[in-house]
Length: 310
Image (cartoon, rainbow, N blue to C red; front, side, top):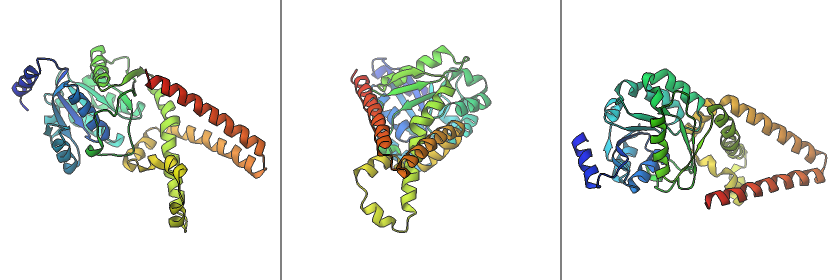
């Protein structure tokens, strides 16, 4: 869309807007929901979508998530004020390299990846002078579904956005990114990248690995059909996230391997302890361990409800 048309849309909205053009690489659950949230708030005039699947992009345009499909990354970012990278982590470096020479002088770039140190390293390597206008971010929201059809405007409401700015990050860029996510309904939390990666290795990446592993274990049994036919609510709840994108979680595991390996080591130690109690018939020890876990979860749930209710 030409600049004149964007200005015309802004004027039609009484001049109230935050962004003229937003370019989204990866119009799936996260990228698509971000677009819908800003459109719901009438905070953007024009959204350009970029992705590998033509069918997904056509669906996104048909659903009103994006206004334009771009096949050339250079043209997609030419007039963009904000660029969101919501692609699988393994594609981030390539996209950064493609867009770096074509970014507008004041364009701000951000991402939605669930690891941060690797993304920051790629941004330093490929964005050049635009690195100061890159804001590493991680919206803590999602479902096990993927693609544009899974997107919805309220996905981020009441959830946390983690930002991990570097010393060079421009204050203006940070304000623009956080303002956009706040409009989507998010609370903003600032963390160091290394701390972010350790925390989410434990509370997000490890649970996904365990969920995939449990389903894979049962699927590998000779009587897997029988096992799955008897699986109930507990199995369903524990394995829901095994329905997530294998490509995305492959990239997450490899990108955050050091922190994830440490998390796996700790979990293996816990399993070893429980195994020993079971082998020894230590019912008292098992009950005490389970009771402590139950109490810790109840405390977390109570705190979570109080935060969401604010």
